[in-house]
Image (cartoon, rainbow, N blue to C red):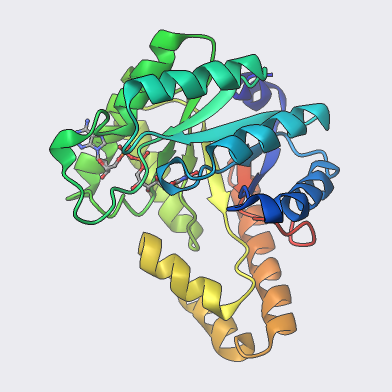
Length: 274
Ligand code: FAD
């Protein structure tokens, strides 16, 4: 089923994200966790794509397996460093596996990479390629606190308008920890006339080390109530996990109460968190 049809029919919707393994030795462990999350009957599940295509095969295999488990898969696909022929080859494989939904991303450009040599400079170019290939429901990423490379929020929103024109049918947000940031972002989208469905991404932070990583990657703002939780429970792993789940749950309740219809939980490979 296409994600856009799910978003129309299931309100409110709840989906989860899993990471494919980096090596075949870890495949069984990740697949077992994925199956356990699938048994919660989410609206759909997304499977990420390792930087530079390192997990392409596992992303496709887990996405196909989800179909067999009765859950609609959303396969992530990044284009940075890939040739157009490589992307078409991956699209043929996804089509052959009956996967209908792709989250089309640029991916992070590795340091020192010569941008001039890239076949794809932005996710919107990948979206055009997928649209020309045909048959897929295409989603994209968006950033309530702006993408780190964006000079300002006007430029950031403009890039989303370009994505939608290139075929993007829904957007999934980067995680955020203050719902007001999401509400302001939704207003900016509305003012720009961007009316594709937006799926709000929530990350239950369950350990202190995760927080440092998240901030270094995405530059998220961490609100005071969240920081107080970390101060109080950060050094007690079991308590931090419960506190992180409780914080995310409150966030989710507030989002639903304020009319956000679709939520995506960055549960990684943790069925208990999901
Ligand atoms: P783009 O949309 O291309 O944007 C990148 C930057 O370029 C932004 O600053 C944007 O404003 C600007 N821009 C875009 N188009 C134009 C244009 N036409 N002209 C000028 N500027 C433009 N990474 C992975 O490696 N694997 C994953 O599975 C993965 N999943 C993700 C899922 C979500 C929901 C999110 C939010 C991110 C995910 N990422 C993943 C991270 C993502 O690859 C990085 O954030 C990457 O740096 C940008 O990808 P993008 O698709 O948003 O790029």
